Amino acid sequence: MAVRQVEGKTNRGRDPHHRGRNGERVADPARSKDRPEPETTEIVLRISSARSAEFEAMFESEEMPIWDDFTHRRRFLEARLVRVDGGSEVREGIQDYILHIVAADHTAHEEHDGDARFNAFLARAQRLQPIGPLVWYGRTIFERRA
Image (tube, rainbow, N blue to C red; front, top):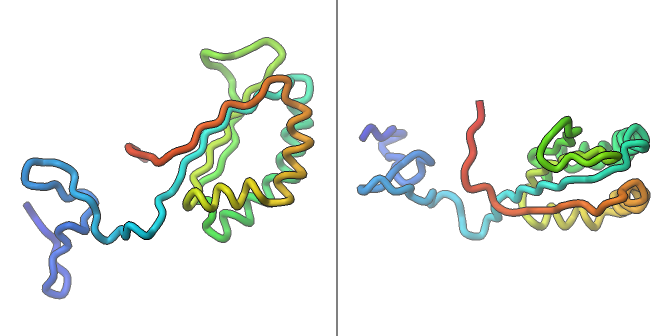
């Protein structure tokens, strides 16, 4: 196994691609147990199709500045809203949106949910939702990016 040398020290055990003797993934000791891991949240918002333009305009004017604040402070590492064009749960009269957030940690998630600006937006956005949202959050365990 090739191990990169820097100033006479190896990075064995710190290389995220390092594998143990039996090929198992070796934990990165550089990641402190005290340092929280990012948290991914996926929410399916179900907005009345007749009010989707209103929702998108409201989202852009009210939630996007919050996202700008949170991404600037690295409380959000990723944030996107996807307008659903198709899928297995498409319903007549409903425009679904997928909200994808990777927060720095669960505390950042809670910070957003407690933000007064967000709560003002949420109160208005909920009136556009004839069906409640689906919400999940957790730690990413596998990922690939191009």
